[in-house]
Length: 585
Ligand code: GLC
Ligand code: CA
Image (cartoon, rainbow, N blue to C red; front, side):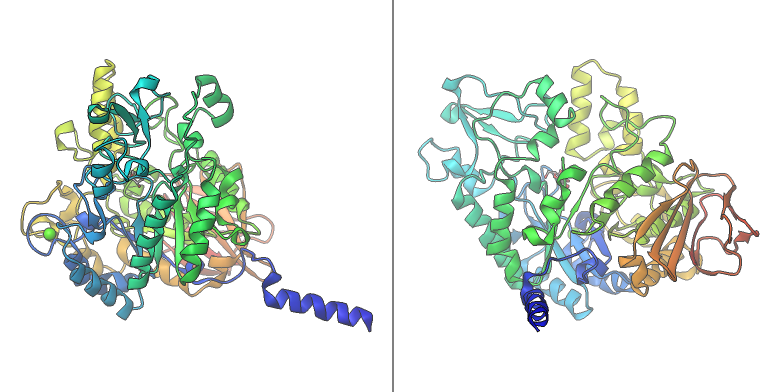
């Protein structure tokens, strides 16, 4: 009897919320496919050459037709656009190029009417230098907004080095003669860092988040959120410290501020927990060891995080975003994604992506964008993204197989990063040719060119002059053509999303890497026991035989295949170049 009482007691504890949350617990955001749109380049409704909210509204049926669930929009707020919206001058107003608050309300309604959810970009590590807070802050040392930012009085000498991305001299401090002080900016000087150690700043950010959540948005993607907390003594970080403690990577130092997790818990308690919303951190500088600190549900911080280990793989050390000319090694690639899967084996939840607005086009970087293999390798990469145990963040245009534009002159670039790094290379007497060649593969502008709707003028994106050049392959790579072709990259994406949406094993099922040392094939299974799916991905442009082992796969059901046929032998699967298949075992 006593035993029974004890068991009942434990059950009721579990029932009343004392239980721990596991990765296998069902949540809508684990089952969602996120589709990311770079608003500047999706669809222009008024002919000024810049994409806008009305443009997105006019194409919601297209987005719905993809089968995706959530739309993430890059920043749509008022901004002088030093870094294309990642420098916000008013968090509660819409960027004038993108439209009005009425347009926003209509867009949100249009999405919700179609069962689509909306994720906005929270850029709160820094604001624009044109933000009223900063304009006030710089006026005098006693201004009420002074402590909204990090200032270092010049009479204390020069502050210890901090990196400023997008700065030609690489420094994260800018001297302002008006008050004889330096201010901190981890990005460009037009993006001063907000002082999160000031409770007033945190309250402003939480209020602003509530403003958008009360309007009905469904969550936030959080820009460089690991950077928010700073050691305000700004100690000297020596090269030796950096190497030994932070793997030589500044973002690992910056992404681990002293009160980071305290602030995230506070944000959760005051804002996120009050809404049925999702949150995803840009995990800049976050390692596998730290990931659960953000997303273990019991810690009550965030839902998901996306790491950089995958997309930074295959670059030459010590050079700015320069890919190894030998290409990347698939075994290392598999190791990274398998390691990141294992982090969330029991708790938390992962994300998966190969492209976004900070990365080049996935087919150019990870597949093969030559005419012969562009389509099939795009489909193969899509298969990878949709069959991992993680929420896919899929970048607009990848569903068409859009590829890098590969500008050959710095004059064609619009991105603050490419322009600053070019100048830096020049000033250091570096090899500018090598820089431009590397940028053809890795520059961010490659993925920011306008979406390709049809073969008409400007790919149907605008009737005006596009803000950035359009890829010439838009004549053949576009929605109009691909819609009509059942074997197009676009229709393959739709099928693949459908397969994931209707197959819980592809969402929650256990991931197991098999044939780990195979340098050509990425093979893994999802699920367990009777419900197991085999995923085979040929990452090469050659035919490759894959050894299926004892029982083989003859007679098993093929769930999806990016070719019209599959050559199955008793013990081998003959995979064609970039072939991808999912087989129900
Ligand atoms: C993030 C954004 C990137 C931006 C930077 C500064 O990395 O994704 O586009 O330039 O933060 O806000
Ligand atoms: Ca426009």
